[in-house]
Image 1: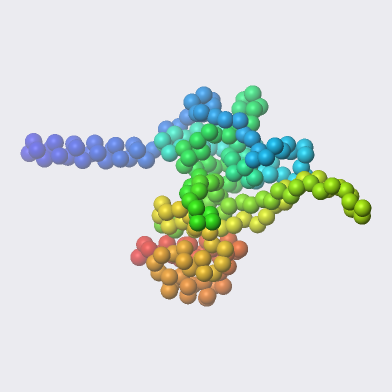
Image 2 (image 1 turned 135 degrees about the horizontal axis):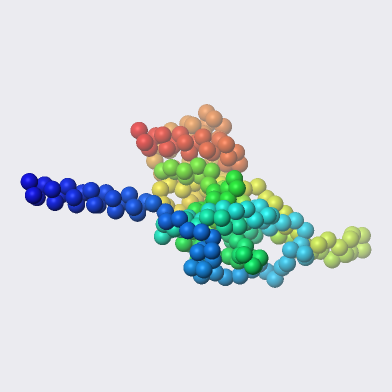
Length: 234
């Protein structure tokens, strides 16, 4: 009987510990500013916004949001904006200074306005990299969108043309699919889309054909990912 009680207490304690590990510790914005190592956000080139037409940001204005860290802290009321060109999640301090985290890999997710973003591994030109993505769907298979922007160099005036300033030109999002915790893979065509799912490829290919799923149609990709996740769960 005594051994049974000890075993029961151990199981309850272990369960409580497991549940506690899934709970984020809530902290305020000032704790975030004081406890995290920060660095000033910079351009990849020596650029300033006044020199360039267009915007490098997903959201031009800062939006108060929440940052969830991998160490299970939740920081609320952080003014956030995403710099597409630099692939930085920027925030503003109470003094009005714009900063970016020195270690973005400590971010599990960030939620601000209508956006939910994660910082994950992905494959680009056969190399594994890290970057920020918008979350479109989550499960065993997850769908992400990576905002894209093009920087166009300024052009000098010519004999028959006026000078043109530097420009940021928005491009369509590109989509990635991630299975489990593997690096996310680009899906820019039908072949890559089918290959992104290591199993159930026949079912996935049939679904794509039937529903005319295309990589540039996020609503169709969401349906496809949901279908795959239903196969995995059965």
